[in-house]
Image (cartoon, rainbow, N blue to C red; front, side, top):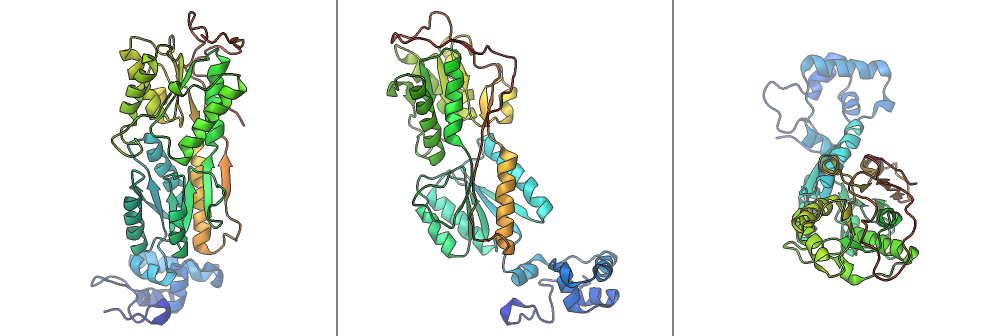
Length: 394
């Protein structure tokens, strides 16, 4: 059995579970002509203590002996795994798959891996996954559920876990120690709605699952803000956030988009345009609109949120709000890696990145005969429907 000294230092056998014939630190030290502690410094990236020539001799010995360091032993010395935990609401939404990929791409060059889990925003499931990650030595977690209240995360911080909240801006009453990285969801909701207003639409619906996450509330607030700025009275009958089989509707977003679009069109004064809370709801809305005998965008315009890969594969290509996924993932990973290394400093990260309006072919000027019924004046149409034009907003 390996002997472990107090303080986490490994004793005579530093290779936990070493197979017969496998090279040891002692073998590497003899071949390189250095001490065992020098080999340990190289293994644990403490190169500043060594000359370049010494480090090179040790690396050469690693290669010649086929030495494979035991990660369990290294974790005992470090006190944590070089792994970042990532909790996402649902991989049924391709946006979260893209964010997982972007997080891995940001972590790999820094020598870290990513362990992701899909939670359906369920608090009990989140707790179970976090406990499992903690037991594996993971001490840094990206929390993507966007809850309205994050009080339950205080217990994680007290356990010396570095927690970064994603897709939710910092709010009054939050733990000061928490880092937050998000797109400006309120601005994104406003930009999407304003694009439709500029095309002459006045009867604009909002399509979502239950509006009980922080990000959905912000997108909804941006929608209402744009209506108010355009002098359009908010009508709750033009909002659909109907029931879902799951608590938040993430796994069945496409189907909810279809059902919700039909509901918005079944009103006597049906909408001429729809702002969807994300792209999956928007793509579902396509089906609902067509089943109602109407066409996108000739009779009903649709705009989404996220800019997932599917938006350019459907017909017509979907107008949407793009999130800077790669930039957000890079900020989050660099912050957590710095926290693990003890170099992050005391100032928490409060990153709110700008969304980008992407106009494609699912939005068009309001159809003739769809004039506003409230007698309000339709603003002049300042833009026409361009083929897959991309417009950025700071």
